[in-house]
Length: 261
Image (cartoon, rainbow, N blue to C red; front, side, top):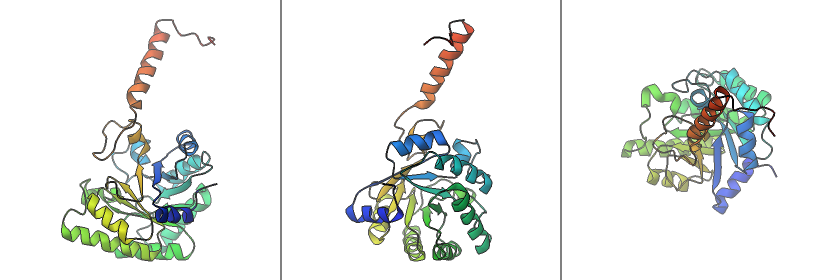
């Protein structure tokens, strides 16, 4: 049975951990889905891991829809969520509705994710959920604010921690079905998780969230520089390099036989 938004809430009640990973194409998404991943996120991190940008800011709505459409063709069971990229929802409510609606209509996903918890975003999310667009929230380290926040851990001071708790509660009130907590202290993530009836999904936020997400390229060891909170479970960068070098050597030395069975 395909994973539903309602199922996520039941898993929180049952204390059944939720597993999420990112995808950016058909091949990766079909592997993740077959492995039983609960949530597949088409994150705007694909700007960096798939397109080579230095941060997530340059990715466009059309590009996200293009990649999300490819991902959706590989997904049969997982819940699919797609990021709204930078400046596709901040300018106005009508812009946010148009952008989120396009992703749902054209990419075949079940929800969108918006970064931030300040009042304008809370109000926007409230409108989106009211008209039937499922929204996942995201607070803590928000990569679209890289030029203001950098990539440092958020919520370390009492003032920052209290702000994030308030934002989490306000986002729940606005109707988000789940909340990503990125790069915040584990005790703060635990407190936020205990205060919410919706699931929290941690990334670099300790072990006490209702679920965990990683960028799949980090998980597989494909990125040259790993974030401090990412644990690689493989080293495919070296594996691929070795395979490519072996192939190139066989071709150059006349050892490669394309007819070999």
